[in-house]
Image (cartoon, rainbow, N blue to C red):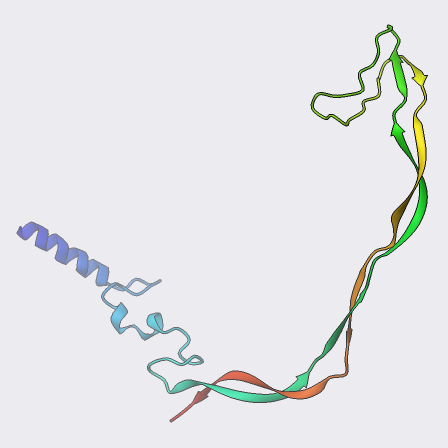
Length: 155
């Protein structure tokens, strides 16, 4: 039992010794710098600095946000409604559908022959002419009072 008490006392004594980089375990309750950092500028227990709310007169900057909506126009475009009929050179018909993508139309890479031309129609659709635009302009500033937290010394 005395051995454990001696080891515990030695451990507490070694922990209490000051190291150059930090305060020891037993020195922390008495070390003001470690507990309260920057006591010269921030209110601490040992100085007479306090937070104070004051109003400051300064320029109040104002801004306006302007928005131009997007512009669309009706344009006539030609769209394909049915792909061309293609026959592969060995005589077998080309399968236009893919098992993974039902609406995907794959054009054959090897030798082929166009049996039926593609079918097109003319449609009228909305086309973006100018995208939406948002911009900010600065208005003439005027003076106003702002609440600000300051540190003051009260004796």
